Length: 168
Image (tube, helix red, strand yellow):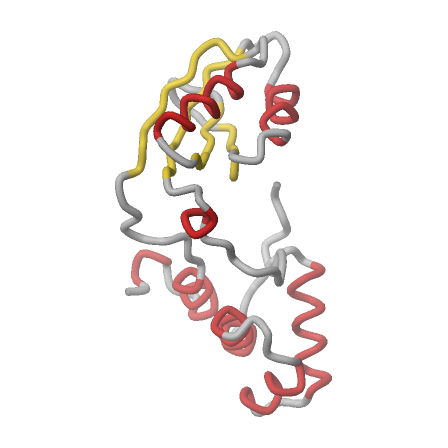
């Protein structure tokens, strides 16, 4: 999914950082802490949502805490005749598939999946490759997460106008 490019400024970055740190904070409290009018915060928030910068406000769930302690990355090679869409629909019906991306390189799709155990991972993989267009799967098991999914350093770099690599 692509969205339009949005130029962030310092207020946008501060608002996003505040909401990331305290997702249950209200608009009025955001305005108080950022020292701007409530209407300004609401307008910025509405703009960031409408333009696809902020995609959601739901809780972040840790899969291991609900019994899915194994994380793996699965590269799929698919039959080019049917295309990616039927396989993506198939993958979307498997709860353990957390995300899937069309990729370049030797594979066609890359999935992040979770399972309850290594044996359960085999069940998940069997379900993934059950689609007729999946020709081959290659799996890499994650041992530990070194850097959790994050975007705040990127938001700060975008607001500063600096390249993301310079934002340490």
